[in-house]
Image: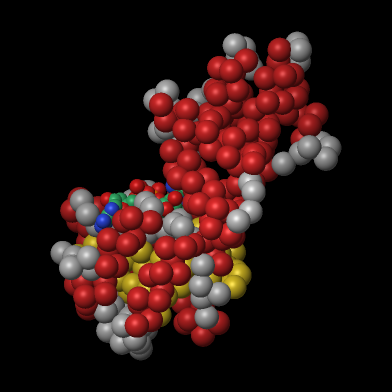
Length: 295
Ligand code: NAD
C-alpha cells in the first residue's frame, strides 16, 4: 500500500509540491500556519489538519517546506509538533533550506523517537515546484533515500543523494554561494561596461559566448536589462541562505570572504526596502555604489 504523506508549509514552494503529490495519487494530509493555504489544498483533494502533531499522527512520511531553521525547529519540537505525534518507523523529509547544524540536531531527536530524517532542499524555484522539475539534493541514509525516492520523482526532475545527514543542506548552501556571487559579478560587469559606453545587452551577448558565460546571464537576462525585479527568488531569502553558509563556515573554521561581502550587500537591500525584489536586483546595489545605472 502506498505510504501516507504529511505536508507542512504550503507557501510559494510547498503548495504546488503538495498538489503534485495529490495529483500523483497519494493520500496527503496538510498543515500550514495560515488556514487559507490548507483550504486551497483541500479543494485539490488533500486532507486538512490543525497541527503538525496531527499531521505526524496520520502520516508515514512527513514533508516540511518552511522558511528557515526556527520554523522547522518549532514545527518539529513544539508541544503540538511532529515529535509529539510521530509513529515509530516514520520518516521526516525536510525540504526547506536551513542550517546543516540544526538539521543534524533535529535528525538526532527524531532518531531518538524511533523515526528518521532526510534533509532534501531544492533548487529550481516556484516554476520548478509547479512543474515537478525541482533539483533535489538529499542527505541521510541510503535506505531512507530509497524510501522517499518515488516522492522525490513526483516533485523533482533531478534527484541526487549527496551524503549523510546535513549533506543536502551543505550542497544547497554551496549552490547559493555560487548563484549570489555570480549575480554580483555580472552586476559589476554590467555597470563597468555601461559606464564605459557599451550597452548592457552587448556585454551579456559577448561575455555569454566565452569563459565568462554562465546560466545567471541567461536566466536573469531580461531582469537585468528591463530592471523589472519582481520575484523570482526574493533577495531576503538569499540573504538568509548566505547567513546559513557563513554560520556553517564559522562552525567548520573555514573562510568565505566574498560570500561575506555579498551577504552585506543583501543586508543593504533589505534596509533599502528591496528585500522583496528578485536577487538579480543586486545590480541595484552596484549601481547605487557607482552612482551609475546600467541602462
Ligand atoms: P514561503 O514563505 O512562501 O512559504 C512558507 C510557508 O510556511 C508559508 O505558507 C507559511 O505560512 C508557512 N509557515 C511558516 N511558519 C510556519 C509554522 N511555524 N508552522 C506552519 N507553517 C508555517 O516560502 P517558500 O518560498 O515556499 O520557501 C520555502 C523554503 O524553500 C525556504 O527555505 C526557501 O529558502 C526554500 N526555497 C525557495 C525557493 C523559491 O524560489 N521560493 C527556491 C528554492 C528553495
